[in-house]
Amino acid sequence: MFKVRIRHLPGNEDLPLPRQMSAGASGFDIPAAVTEPVILSPGKRGLIPAGFALEMPQGLEAQVRPRSGLALKKGVTTLNSPGTIDADYRGEVGVILINHGEEPFTVRRGDRIAQLVFQEVPAVRLEPADDLASTARGAGGFGHTGK
Ligand SMILES: O=c1ccn([C@H]2C[C@H](O)[C@@H](COP(=O)(O)OP(=O)(O)OP(=O)(O)O)O2)c(=O)[nH]1
Image 1 (cartoon, helix red, strand yellow):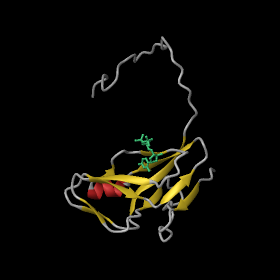
Image 2 (cartoon, rainbow, N blue to C red):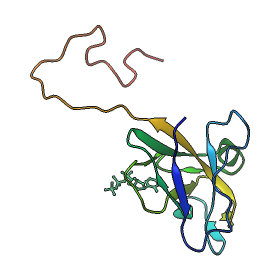
Image 3 (cartoon, rainbow, N blue to C red):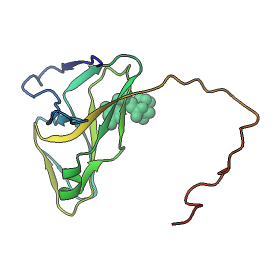
Image 4 (cartoon, rainbow, N blue to C red):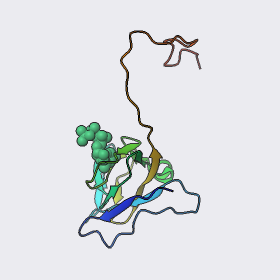
């Protein structure tokens, strides 16, 4: 179990904290912290504030992921999916939403627009090398095995 500290930014104490909607849910749903409704026209994107900031232990990240219901029913998703919240980021979490649907989409205060999933991030040091170990795949990629 990891402990992640969270604080509402001033003026957002009325919003619920992100929460898991079932005991086994991976994600903590993020309520929108817009003060006025925001309308995303078809094809448009916007940065929706979440109204809170996080303090994670080093070695964790938080991913901002879409909600499948919004994606399926409205065509609304997170553009940079998954968004990355770094362990050392102390600013307000934001959700970059895009409307791929045919209808305008309205974001209202408190709407659950995305979800936060916490992940462990291994410590990695990149080591410059002249040769890389060979494999059967080699440089094949991008669909080289066919359909
Ligand atoms: O969906 C997102 C993605 C990022 N962030 C915040 C937290 C993250 O730690 C910071 C930087 O994100 P990222 O590294 O993806 O952005 P960048 O474009 O590389 O900007 P920077 O140069 O600030 O790192 O922005 C969010 O609030 N929501």
